[in-house]
Length: 141
Image 1 (tube, rainbow, N blue to C red):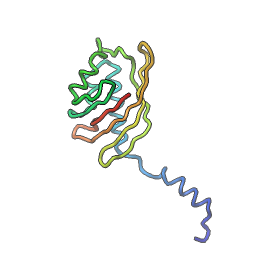
Image 2 (tube, helix red, strand yellow):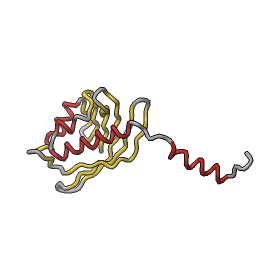
Image 3 (cartoon, helix red, strand yellow):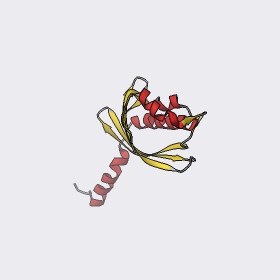
Image 4 (cartoon, one colour):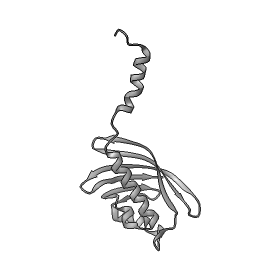
């Protein structure tokens, strides 16, 4: 170990995470989330819920809601005349973690421009399906 100093070891340790490749799922999941938010903002319920798997489960204030159709019914009152009465949706991505072939996304949702700004946390489990990354479980508060 001649010529190797503690500074060299420390630099290698700090640089190692940056050298690791980003999770290839991240771009697909981000794109799906941005498309879903754009659909919310344009008042398109069907496009908004397209990110959910048909067998998805939503966990919210009302408890468990099972299936994309039931999730759509839960959100339907917010969608009125080509807009969303709750305001404009955006996400703050906080972290993405692999769980085998699935991914868990931690994010903050923010609604602005409505009666009052709202925000909360969401934990989403994604699975890669034939038609892209889909939400299997959504726990939002």
